[in-house]
Image (cartoon, rainbow, N blue to C red):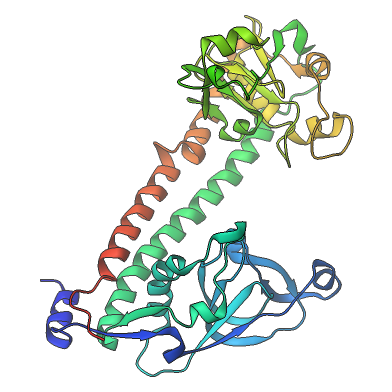
Length: 390
């Protein structure tokens, strides 16, 4: 029997008390804060908003609304119902709610963990804009075991959280190291031969079968790559497949494994991003497929163009969110061509960093994923109580 099992047996053998959030917390909302206001009042104190990236930090200002330990939650948008533990001096925007604990014998970290699993169930997803407003959060019910049980649950889950944070920090450091070597190894002197891509490869643009014709897509078996999939880096599978009829209807072309693919267009920062295929597939019209010849290692070309993202963005025509690059620009792009032995040496080094930083089956991403799954399993197990009494 674990320490937690013994505590539950001794302190709450007949179940635990269930309370509403409004019974134990004061609920408030943030205020409207524009990006211009944040820019004009830059400082050291974070402003939290509805996003979940970067721990929800929208920016930092010179003043603060709150100082202490609180919970915040996202009230509106795709991340509605996300709960965060906050400590220190900070502010929140109008799409955040704030929970101030006012009841005794409740561990705020326990409340953070239990609401993290419970609050999302109360999100109203109707009308296309998910919401968890204060009046609904107030009615969320949670089990509250004795404080000793709460503390032990927090100790266990904090350990998992700390381990995941350490692995994530290590991954960040390795990615910085990877980026350093990517630029260092691919920075060649003027003495290295250079050539246009068109002398080293065949370049092809893809096409999209008509999406309105279901026979082109239903039960398709031919991998078809869209521009957004360049973000995968290495392509072992595509999100969509087309039928032979769909393939025959368009001008798209099957390209072999180890083809370098450059996004000619795409939303946001997609244009100029690079991937490499590990399977045979066809692409849409927003991608340029570069099928290399014997003069250059395709993996070497992949890494080199990966390091030239900013330059590819710079040479693209126009500065909109779509469009910019074209097939001729890629064909005329000049790349270094060191001896094949040197290309292979560089590829071996960068392959190790690529696997360590990005491969979801090995390396740090795989370990982080496994720890996250383990954390979620124990979190759900630890926060489930039998025979809960009102």
